[in-house]
Structures are given as C-alpha cells and as structure tokens.
Amino acid sequence: MKFCSSILAICALAPAANAFMVQPPKTVTQPHTYQSQTLKADSNYSYLGNLNGDDVKTKTTVASSTSANSVSSTPAGAMKKSTASPAASSITKYDKPISTKEIFDNITPVTVQGGSLRTCSFDESVDRVTVYLKTEGRPLNANVELWQGPDNSPQKMSVYLEDGSLRPFRATIETPGSSNAVAIRNTGQMEFPLTAGLEADMSGEESPAELLLADSQFRTVQGGAVYTTPFPPSVQSVQVALRSDGRPLNARVELLQGPNNNKQVMDIYTEDGYARPFYVIIDTPGNGNVVRIVNTATVEFPLTAAIEPYLVEDAADESNGPGGMLWS
Image: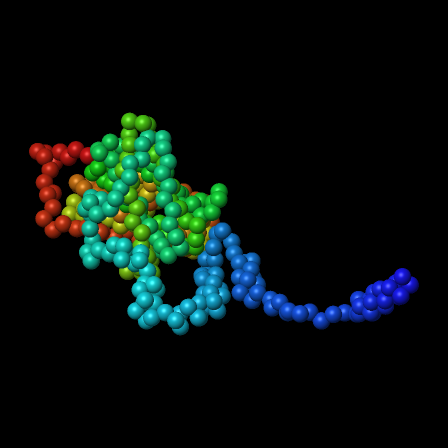
C-alpha cells in the first residue's frame, strides 16, 4: 500500500514541474488582412456618399486584393462579359431635339393620383434624371423633390401647369453622390391625376445646363430682380438654365401668354446651385409667349440665367383672327 502511494506521488510531481512553464503555441493564427482593410475602408463611409468619388477608389483598392486569384483563373471572354455594365445599354440618347410628347411614347410612365406620392430610387451610376409630367388636359399641381439620405432634400420644385397635355413638364435634376431618390407628389385634388415618367442618364457627359450656359450669352439676375424674354411664334419650346456660384438658389420661372396670364409656373429651390443647376424645357405653343425669371432670394444670392430656343419651326402659323384677335 505504501509502495503504491509513493509511485502515485512521483507520477503526480513529474508533470507538475512543467505546469508553471509557458508552453509554446501549437498553431499560430494569422490576422485576417482583408477584414481589417474592409473595416478601415468602411469606417469613413457615410449614407450621403463621397461627393468627390474618393470612396470608389478605396473600395476598388480593397477589392483588388481578394479578386486577384479569381481574375487570373477566369477566361478572357468571361471577364469581358462580367465587367460590362448591363445598364449602359439603357441610356437613351437623342441625336436631335425632340418634343416632350414624343418622349412619352418611349418611356414607361406611372399614374400619380391626386394627393398621393410616388418615389423612384436609383444607384450612384446615374449622373442625372429627367422628370416628365403631364395630364389629359386638366391643370397640374405637383411637388418634385430630390431626396438624398433621410430628411435631406437638396432640391425642390413646385410645378403648376394650366394644361398638362398642351404644355407637359420636363426638367433635368442632377444627382451627384449616392442614396438619391426622386419624389413626386400630386398636390391636386383626387379628380386631377397626373402621369409621370423618369429617364436616367449614365453617359458621364456634361449636364445640359452646363452646355447651355457655355454656349449662350447668360445673364446675372440679382436677388429680387426680374428677367423677361419674349419669343416669336416659330419657337415651339425653349430651354432655361439657372445656376449659382455654390450658394443656395431660389427662383421662380413663369411662362406667360398674354398680360399676366400664367400658363406654367415653377418655384425652384436648390441647396447648391453650382453642383445641382436647374434645367427645364418649356413648351411654348401659340403666339405671345414670354418667359419670366424672378430671383426670389435676397440681394446676397444672385444667380446666372440662360434662355435659348429649343425647337423652332420654320413654317409656323402666325396668323391671327380678324382685327388681330388672339385667344390665350
């Protein structure tokens, strides 16, 4: 019995000597490089996006380390097919000026009932969207807003059309950054529905407002000032561009036909008039059309305006009734 106890005591003391010594690890766990880089890159992410486009470069650098093996093992034909953008073929380009009524035949519109709201979201690859509104001949009252993130509307406009079929609405909204959406609210009664359509531009080219301001003689409209321009009957539609030097833009654009007879009214607000200039094409059928631009801001907020004809017909009917009578 004593002999067994001695043997058990010796066996117990032998491994105990090594119990207090630091043992080397059997396996060494390497840090997860891709995860740490991803967290570092995503730590600067914002729901508003990077307006300068730096976040796109960071994500490309991080993703290149993980996709190196997959690209090397992918055939050349398959790689070209995967890198091609499927949405690039949906870009609609017009070789010549086209009327708003003809564009409605090429898009898929939606109906917005009176008092209802419809929204449309899109990804960052969209540079700008063109909004189209029309009715079946009744008046149109609507609010069009650009949403970017929660509770942020960098651009708003209130639209009134006396006849939404004769003079449909057509405006281009710049969408820099990410998390963009367009909201269209029909502020009219239930008896006045409207038809809305959107067209995305992902060409990466300059905006139509920048092209118009660069190719035409623009004018500076000081805060509280009014700028009017008449057009002959041969002009079927005009294009208007408004821009500021980066400060907020508040303006009202009106189409008048006859003395104080508003056919179309737009109240515009833009948070940054340089990054998001306002561009609209106004149909001007008939005679005696005048476009009036009012800078509704104070004197500290001037804006730059450019107005040029868009569609011109050579053989326009300029004849009036007996005695020069003209209904408008």
